[in-house]
Length: 586
Image (cartoon, rainbow, N blue to C red):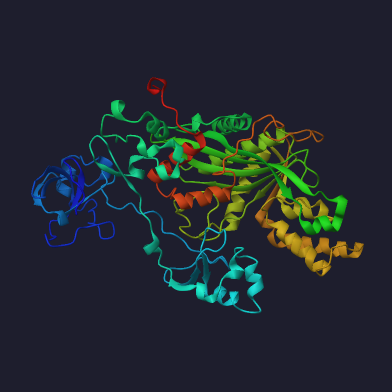
């Protein structure tokens, strides 16, 4: 049966189809003609008892809302009235974009063994989830062979899920990866006033399935922007749709970063059509457990754990009337209470941005983002931190750090940015910080940490960093698998091995000595020495959690409508349950 049709709905029309043809659906939709092709988008003007309908064709430029001037009509041919269309000749379309399907990004599949991205058309093996795992086990054919090899099985099991040893060869199906077959599409919502249909993204409608069930968003009345919203729209729904980044709570760090960035931009002659809004989205105290091998080696001379403050710092800007999430930075702060060698050090573990920032003059993204990071470094130095460590390695092809499905960089396309280029970006940032007195000096990790290293216990290690795993491997290799109690000669050899390893990756790291604090001032943390409350949200407590949520929920940043929608969903969950205006409380 065709979908119920009412006057005013937008449909796609194909009058060449016959009455006996099958009804169009999401898998075989009527394609939308794009400008300058003649329009096949229409507005239903009449629905007849025999099931036919009349449609008035409109401009197919969705940005114009179906209404354009005479020049557009000459190009696209709207305004024509098509009468007596039978159900196979029309299909309900979104009244926002005039399309049937709004496809999400193509899914990606990685082999769980070697973490290689599987290409379209490649065969692989997949077994259903086992034990407490929520995920299937997908392996490339090479790793599948290793899993059932006597000599190569154990190393592979070490990186797979806990239930992997229980899997049998018969559990694995041989499949061909076809990402287009797995692609999902955006859902539709219907306006309760005009009964038109909209994609969630086009209507800026918060997905009820991605919000707490107790909010009962699905029971709220949705009224589109074409209709009069004041009388009938749900206040709670409007509160979610219009929530701003400025509604999120501020703190000393966010206030200082906003002010510092504004001052730096003024000095650089860069203005913003709408100001930056900086917020600390997550602030959580965690413990980094010492590398077991180092603890065994040094005993009481090496700490068991290293407490740190993890913070997620986000920046937003209003773009065309709606907020857009455009910058994110995750930091780990090891303050004066943390044992050596991490004492008074902060680690910028991940930094990422989108391309939706608006500046005057245009193209000043680097200036703005440099100002944000240097604003943090200035505040960290004033808070007593002596050093800042920065990871400057770009993500590999197909990977992302924080933002999911960003718009590609025109200079690189889908190829990853070269390490040398990203490193140069950070160097320019630190040179500016040095010129303004925020940083006393900086260099690569070999210059700043390793050149004078005499013991591994003096090398700072951070949660999720590149080095903890490699340090453990070095100690294991030096001790031959026994408990690592070395002679002085062995210790010297171990340090030299560490120096050699660092030399190979030194360009991936930068270390800056901050100049904001007195040499003897203890770092109390950028939260003011435990004065700011913990602000934890599982959605953003780690960059891995946020990225995984974006992928699962299709929060993309590939175009501006999606970036604004993803930001709306993020703000909805960070801001908590919507509270209607006082006049609606009754």
